[in-house]
Length: 315
Image 1: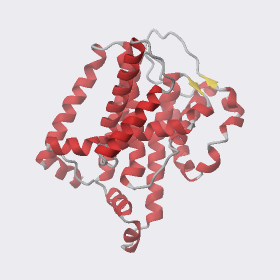
Image 2: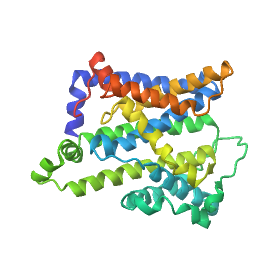
Image 3: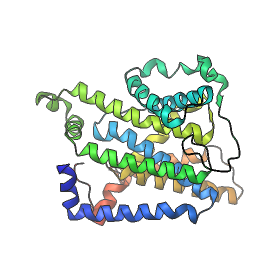
Image 4: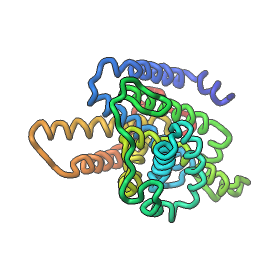
């Protein structure tokens, strides 16, 4: 609590909060002014911003690289989808099971990623399809509804993840993670149980990431093991933080906006001119990553924050 008060008392932090609140106000009224396509793009942006923040807890705060975070999202997706299709359990209740399962499975990554091809409860490799219907009203409890409802769900989730990450980074736990990230041997020498705190990072990150899977399942209405657990899914999740700025609060959100916004613009322009290049989006992602690594190795947000005079503290 003291860390939050100190943060709010800083002039640069207040400017950042004013900017954030103004952005939030714009995003809250965006569905009234944009079409379905742009609304779907914004949903994807928030999804990647949320997953980027979840991954950032582990890599950006604790310095532990993970290239398999799609596993935790996949677990969240399958647990809630299976409970919903088999037993009619609402996804918010299913999340209470999915989050701890994802957290506990953080230490068993090796074999879990290959198990879903043989589980009959989720139709194995044949795929699991959720019932799709034309809903006359939004059912938030069962996550059934139109894109506007999903937009606000993902906006709320992204805001929640931002607040959670902000609190974690300024907590005692966050300072331990920072010490481990900078020099694990030195942190151990000062008495920090590095193994325990790294496990905390994995468990919290996995639990948060599980909600991304819940959203994915109920937004897209279908799941396939080779799709949900594919390495490309994990790579998409981490590109936002890398481009925006690993270890920062705004970085994953800004990175998701820049990456997805530009990628959709490029593919849309290509379609308008009749170009059909397979894998164009992936090529564009690679080019963006290369440019950022060469020109702005810290990411876009640290550079932009310095220009705006709103540097984040505690990085």
